[in-house]
Length: 110
Length: 115
Image 1 (cartoon, each protein chain N blue to C red):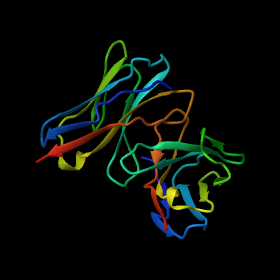
Image 2: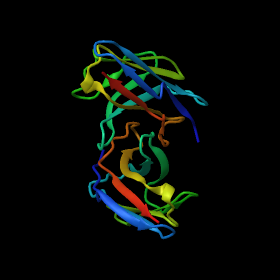
Image 3: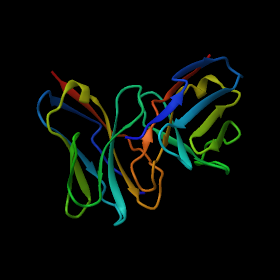
Image 4: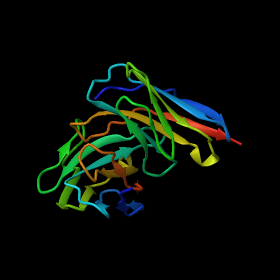
């Protein structure tokens, strides 16, 4: 599976949009981009995933560049409860294992 | 979404003893489950893939005789840490998929402390 690169930490003001970038320049054509988050001492929580089109659900939006080498997770109105470590993972649709990178620690500031 | 449950949420054991952690898929069947370990301030590390009715597949560097995995049914996988030592203290997390090629759902994790 392709590796991902994320900034180690970010801050965001409460109520503002949080934009979390992820670089996956070696992604293959059959690999999806998944986003999970982990709040302290809990299991990871699924947020969203996509292949090449932009995706939106009730939690977030996922913007994937046309060349698919990077993506951005957008939390439209960050709240204090969004403080967590966010993981960007690429995974082939033929496999099931998720390999986690180092993630981005997002702190939402009041 | 689908629910994966772990038990216990936390456990303290004495060095040299064995500890069993359960992972259950509550509303779906899972032929495959995954076990992760997470040390403080680090990311999740995949330990092994648990396969229902067959042997588990371990990641490189993970001792299969120390971390025994049993996947006896389509809704239950167990991880037994044998002869636990303080360095085995960690956060253990399992995951499973309701369907192939979909998102994984994770348990809430088990905090193991070996004293």
